[in-house]
Amino acid sequence: MKKFSWFLVLLLAMSIFLAACGGNEGGNGGEAESEDSDSTSEEGSEDTASKEGWVENITLLTGGEAGVYFPLGVALADIIDSNVDGVTATGVSSGASVSNAEQLNNGEAQLALVQNDIAYYGAEGVNMFEEPLDNYSGVFTIYNETIQLVTLADSGIESVADLEGKRVAIGDIGSGTEANATQILEAHGLSVDDVNAQALDFADASTNLQDGNVDAAFVTAGTPTGAIQELSASADVKIISFDQEAIDSLMEEYTYYVQEDIPADAYDNFDSTATTVAVQAMLIASNDIPEDQMYEITSVIFDNLDDVANAHVRGEELSVDTAQDGMSIDLHPGVQKYYDEQ
Image 1 (cartoon, helix red, strand yellow):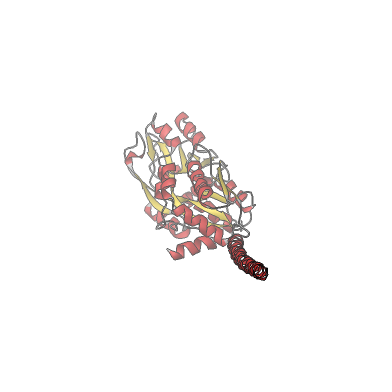
Image 2: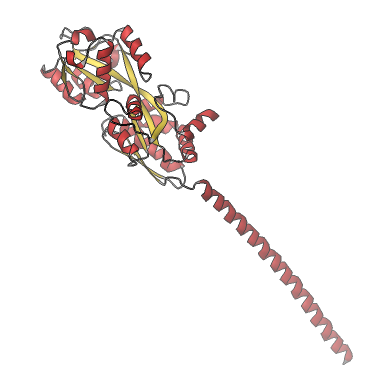
């Protein structure tokens, strides 16, 4: 009986010992699990902290759906939307450079495509802007938008000087084209008052040229330009070269201009090259976008240039090497950081 009692005591002791071991094992496992959980939580907190203040919904203003800005802008927005976590980006059709700059400055959008001269005018508060727009910065320039002085081959106009007293379409009131036309006339010793200026957009200018209601028209757009293509399909057109001295003067006074030659094969019924100047299409960003977010946006765009090129042939011209050519305003800090690292 005593032996049996001792046997029971021994079994009880062993049970207590094993239970204690099992408890410790479970305790250690729970502690490890807790540590893993804490580690994951800390990583998540760090990630959240790194994106604190980021803009979650980004609107990218483009231009009319028939132009170049629209497909390029939609492609840029899609790249951001697909590659920046936690951010939704949408490219939307809009007015044009002037309204894009104003809307961006007012906080109605976060990114926009504009002409680099318009970006400059806005930042300085000159020409069509009554006061400086101080809430946007530069991202990159993309392609040239050529200032084309178009007339019919039999108009008798051979130079800018020949425009004196003629009916000349200079673009919509307050447009970038109007500003370009004014500066080009002045570089050639003329003023808007020396011509019979007509406030017409590209399409209306083309129609009025064909109908004989205007003698020449200024057009600022990437070449080939649709409105001029349509005109050249039914009439012999001529694009007037600018005087080299005037071109040099323009580029010295306005740093956003670059010299450009329009090739003879740019349009139908156009058989000679023309030397002119161009501004550039560029992307601007709201200063409300944090530096680290803008750095990531810039990075993912340059990592996906094939998507930009596939959207429109002019998108093939975007590259890190030329992204700052013709940059007319200060770069966004996040963009500057990206370029400094390249």
